[in-house]
Length: 226
Image (cartoon, rainbow, N blue to C red):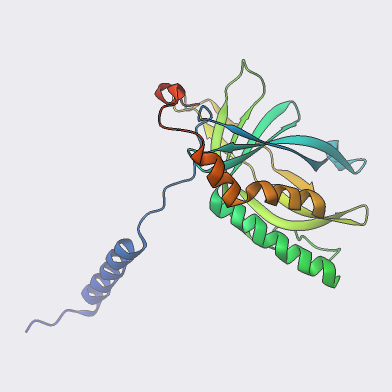
């Protein structure tokens, strides 16, 4: 019997590990949303944003919450610095938001929230999707992005925080036409976060999804998805 030398054995073993990993884990499709998909308004909630250069504390804004049943995605639509942002949450992201807020509540009640240091991502990070546009006459940019979950203090008041990281859009028709969105934190009071979680409730979304036929929507035939 021929005995493999050490280097050949190492390469064979590495290949076997990769092959088994691919067969057992599979591939996860990226989370994306078609802006033209059917939409169901869920309501409005209030959220706080930083003021310009973070001077003067926070400013409250009423944002729209919209459900996209085909993608099972919930959109938080808001305006910032003359842009309209559509921040999309997948089912996994919504569950992570709920779990993070539960941990925040526990620390809030136990008075163990830390006033110093960076706690904006202490509860983890989720994959989201972003569509943003300055006006109806400009390019509608879209890209995957991550959202950090944590908390922060503003003027000695604690807030549950979602930190929307920068997204990079590259136009498929022109590599020179690329756009980066800015990093935007959103500050929720406990009542505001609880109100959003109520709109995240999957049983509610499943009922809404059952009342709309996403297969026959004429917009699905649109060539330009975005």
